[in-house]
Amino acid sequence: MKHMIFGALFFVMPLQLLAAESEYPMTDVCRATLNDMLNRDLSIMNATQIEDGSVRVQYTRLQDGKLFSYRCRSTDGSTIGILDENISGPRWYGELPDDIQRSYRIKDGKLIIRSFSPLSETSSEKVYSPAEFPLKKNSKDTLSNFLRIYGSSVAKNYLGGKLKFTRAYQVVQKPLNSYRLDFETSAKELLSNPAGSENDDIYNANFKKTEAWENAFCTLELKKFMQEKNIDMVSGFIISKGKNQSIAACLK
Image (tube, rainbow, N blue to C red; front, side, top):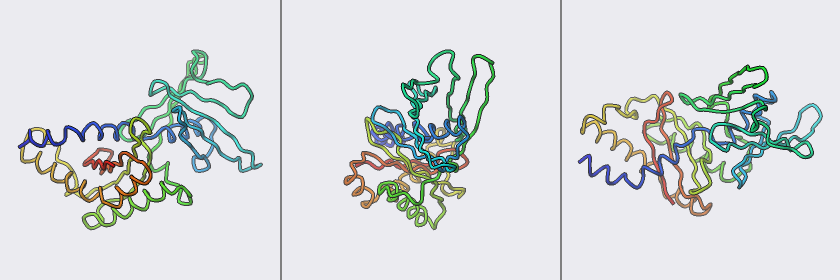
C-alpha cells in the first residue's frame, strides 16, 4: 500500500518542495534587511518583486514626506546586496570583500539577518518572525486580497475552525508562478505522526489527513481564480510550532 501512495505522490512532491523552498519571500528578506540597516518600521515599507529577481523596497519618511527607494538581491541564496536608488551612480553594496556583509538564513521558522563588518571584525544578528510581516489589510491588490479572504474562509470552515490563517505570499515566479498560504494549528487531530516513516498504518493515517486537507483546500473557486490570474500553483501549509504537518498542492 505504501508503494502505491508513493507512486501517486511522485509528481506532486517536487511541487510541494518548491512551495516549501522558502518560508520568507525575498520581499520579506529585503524589508527585514533594510529594517536592520536603516532602523525603519517594516509597516511603512512596500516591497515589489522585479523580473530580474531583485526586490524594490520603497517607503515615505514620515517626518518630511520624502520617498526613498532601495533594491535588494541575493546571488547565492544567503548573501544580500543592497542598491541605494536615492543616489546617482549607485552600486550593489555588500558584494565586495571590504563592504559590510549582510546575509540571511531561516531557522526554526525564524528569519535571521546577519551583518558583519570586515574592518572591525564585528557581527550582529536580528531575528524576525512571520507575525512581523502581516498582509496589508488596506491593500488594493486584488490577488493578495482574494488569497487573504480565501485563506480566512478555509480556516474558519475546516474541521470546525481549528486552523488559524496567518499569511499568503508569492514563493517564486519562475519556473512556476507559485503562491503559499500558511495556517497554524494546535489541534491534535490535524497533526502528523512522525512515526509514519516506520509504520504503514501510521503512514496511511497521515496520508488520509493530507488527502482530506488537499480536498478542502483545492476548491473550484481557487482553481478558477488561478486560471484567471495565470497562477500555476497555490499550496496550503498546516503548521504547528514551526513544523509542517500537511501540505496541499493545488495545481492550475
